[in-house]
Image (tube, rainbow, N blue to C red; front, side, top):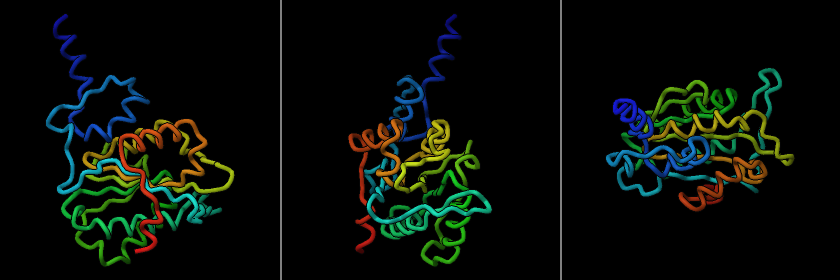
Length: 212
């Protein structure tokens, strides 16, 4: 009986990520049963005290673009903000393992192509993939590009709770989500996410990266 109790206890302790990053998934998907091991509870990048960030593109005009052949979406504006954020935080991100993920293969293709053209990204340890393609992996820093931005609040398959959970829990030290609160905020899960980040992380505006 003792062995079973100890095994059950071990399964509720996570040793991978900052507790602030874990918080939303822990409450939404694991009923608050997970605990962070003390050595990684406050793990972070050097000189960085913002492990959880949402960059809001609402009002920026960054509309999603559908590729009718691939039936997949991209959002060029979200890549622009991601690029500006990485350039601004280059010193903090240098040396970190970085993952850039999106629910949409079209966005992954677009971001991958654009990164190859950007000299400032040379030397950074970057990997770009879909959420599904990133399952089972982890990085120091994860950027999530949600892509969807439309006036009908249509989310497509980013409504999939499992995908959101997988995406958020790939990050060890820092998680940055880029999305349009006006589009996603009407969905209960994403409304909860925005509220959670407002209370426990940092709600940033894309406008802060458009006026540099």
